[in-house]
Length: 355
Image 1 (spheres, helix red, strand yellow):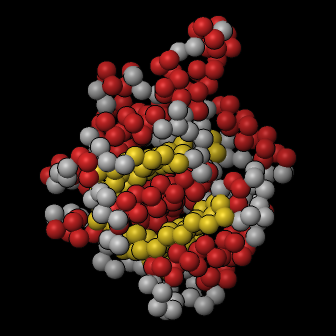
Image 2 (cartoon, one colour; image 1 turned 135 degrees about the vertical axis):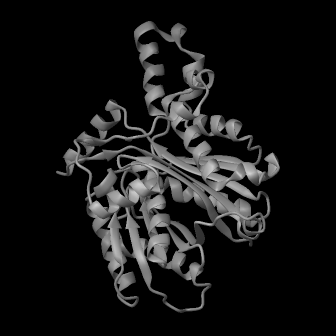
Image 3 (cartoon, one colour; image 1 turned 135 degrees about the horizontal axis):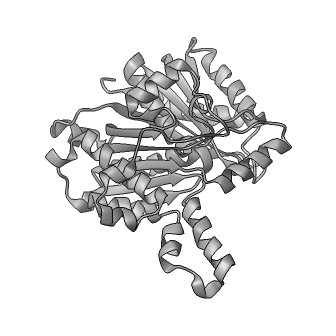
């Protein structure tokens, strides 16, 4: 199976736009704000033609502009691949919810006869993916995933598999989240039941993923390698909650780490671990699992992304971007841990480019 490397990265969240802004926010530790950490310093419409922007929802504009920025970062214009050898993969916890609200509001106010076909098309969770694929002229496989904080890992795993099998040579893997007021209200009420405050986060992150040998042959600048991944589920978990079983979290992370080491049984130290779960019984289970994983490996910094940019920020995309930044800065492997409703768990190991 061919290996995959990251050759391009774009990220925008409450910290601002770009890897440097995210790194600075991680070092600071927290960004002040109220219930929502809104995207700052990034205007998607600057990257789009006016006619294009008018036909897109806010979510579609966000994802398409991010993909174009990641493509520029990877220098794909100087290294073109056939369109059919390029795939697009997208993750989001809640999908195109802002335009869905607009669509339903029209029906409630004016009846079904007033239902807007244009708004309906944009309300689909896959709508941003279609716009991005057209803007990139990517005609290979295209898949969307809605899996809570696990969405980026799910999309990345699918893109990595497509490259590994030889079906494509390049994949754009993106994850996003916007926070319309109605979603913030729902999340706040759910959190209040458990006596927890909520601080939701917006964000988008896009990776350009390429087959390692092809990327190096074409002179790409490699940011990081995808060394190991794992996805699993906890059958004992509630359909509406993350897994509360430390063993379930530990098993997934251990599987990803074993794949990263090639199953040699060695336990290389980790530079950092990136998590994103908000305070909850599930996050305590995740923390207990990570402590057990670190026990035989020595200490590694645990970076809690939700404290910096809010919960659900980029549907796990901001955490993945943080891992790439940390792997390059620390020069070692970084483990990303994530969960979703129904007890789904996932992990990815990001290695520095020279590893």
